[in-house]
Amino acid sequence: MPECKALYDLKKKSIPEALQLIKSGDAVMVALGAAEPVALLAQAHTIAENGVRGVDITNCLPMGNYEFITVPNPEVITNSGWFYGAAQRKAAKEGQPHVSHVPQRLHNAGIRRYQAMRGDGRRVVLLVSCSPMDAHGYLSLSLSATYERQLINEGVFVIAEVNTQMPRTFGETLVHISEIGALVESDRPVPELPHVPFNANDEKIANFIAERVEDGSTIQLGIGGIPNALANGLKNKKHLGIHTEMLTDNMVDLVRCGAVDNSMKTLMKHKTVGTFAMGTRKLYDFVNNNPSVVLNMGCWVNDPAVIGQNYKMQSINTAIEVDLFGQCASESIGPVQYSGSGGQADTAIGAQRSAGGHSFICLYSTATIKNKDGEKEVVSKITPMLKHGSVVTLSRNDVDYVVTEYGIVSLRGRSLKERATRLISIAHPDFKDELNFHVKKHPEIY
Image (cartoon, rainbow, N blue to C red):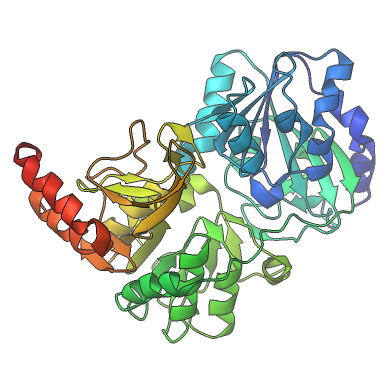
């Protein structure tokens, strides 16, 4: 439509012009992961030259080493993240004053941050990436609908980076040109997350889980060696469905080999459902203009009440450490934030509401760390107590299966004594005596 093209041209700006629209005291929220507007964020630190002060930028899974993160300038920009990337992790470990974590579950992360910022009297600005506008005046939010569409519904001021290389996706990703305050154009590669090869321990863990995933199940997978090994182990299954927060490369493989056809799903049958996509070009090409793939808002996709409606929902996530009570620390090492809660609790709780559904928490039995003397030391990841200050991502009330390379145990409905016995059975043999000694020494807590 000619009027849409005219409106597009009216809102088109250079990057410096677009960044001039950010004012002192604004709360800037950024699209998730690979959907982040790289060209805008690469120059976000330059708002200091405009005399702007007191801006907070909230992001999730940042893919780049942006200067507003790596070079502290807290009078101008503070950075709040609800799932840390490498640059934030480094800044937090160094105690940099401009970076802090926002504890959130994925299904309500965006709206809660928005409400908090509005409660402080801040204007909320959303920075997104979009695929190019179609003939009807619609752009696609491309690789994430997690909170972006929800914030646009709230009437936030939107600055879009229209990138010719962003895939066009379906679901709650459509945004009309009239909803965008300003836009810049770019032609740059989409950030990619390299595929992680799986090792022998990943495969052992995956095999324990694959035995319990029945034909017709609906699955949620994360990223890393264990989920990649599991996807490989599910290729001989039939009529699987996908309802997940994150679409990954391994899900493309499951669709292409025929294991996933979404034919037995309760919700959105025949559709692969996620809330964001992040991986390699293989994934981005797969979702591009693919009507069988739907990205919907996280407030629906990750709502445990929604997840629980899926047929035989199977949720697979990883943890850093699990104690003998069954508490899962999945986002911090001691009190130091490493990543974020993401959707672990959402999917684990939701899967257990499903008829025939289960939640699996996976971890290696050991890790090699540097001790206080700087020497390498092998420690058990199944521990009597979580490391002091560790964040409990999944409570002991909500844990179901726990899996290591030494086995799989169900903790659902089990007493503390039963849990301890079962968890010790899948610990590394070198640490079983130590763990058993702890239980015998402290009968009052089990």
